[in-house]
Image 1 (spheres, rainbow, N blue to C red):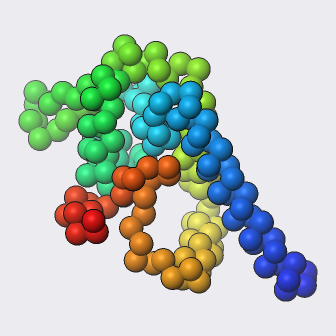
Image 2 (image 1 turned 90 degrees about the vertical axis):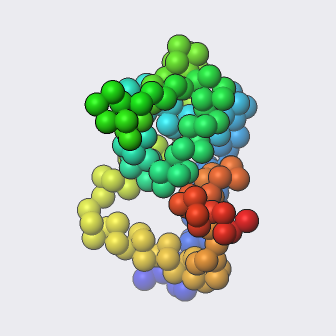
Length: 168
């Protein structure tokens, strides 16, 4: 086994690598598309399969539905997506890319969130549990268990609307 200082140094370096790729990819996405990574990720999902229900988009991106609505509000304001109510069930809202949205997705950069989710979903439950426990330990070391999770390079919180209002 490696000496303790080497293990600690390796963990810190791995955290630095994670922050580095998150920052670099987020800046690249924003500079090339004027979107935050999570917005582009939603658009790429819609480009693959659309229309999609808002609830399905939230599930696929591991975001609360309220957070997804906030993302869609911003994308709709930029005329990149459109929402339509289902004729069969008025509670269901479908989202689709506009022509402008499809154009924006063309030649857009990789989205780090997609890499993370795809990579994590490929692991076994046991490996996911180990990763979760390890990250949970780092969160505890930093004392940030109660800090609301923000989307990468965004002020949007990944919380239900009521909880997000209480955190401001």
